[in-house]
Image (cartoon, rainbow, N blue to C red):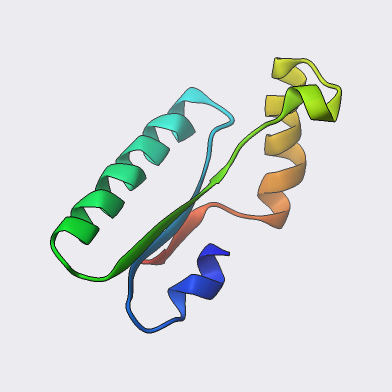
Length: 84
């Protein structure tokens, strides 16, 4: 979704982040802060797409779900900045 919205006029900030480990959680927090700041400055639309887990519905332990995000979601949905 972040890639698609980055191409639309009026989008000022579009990124994808993951929540599968502490380093990526910190990056996600920074991205969310940047998105709010971009909106407050009136620069345009902002979106932060987050890859997260759902261990209950996936039938996995929390640690297994974090590994699943890393091993299966990140190759299909790479994190990155699409419009900054």
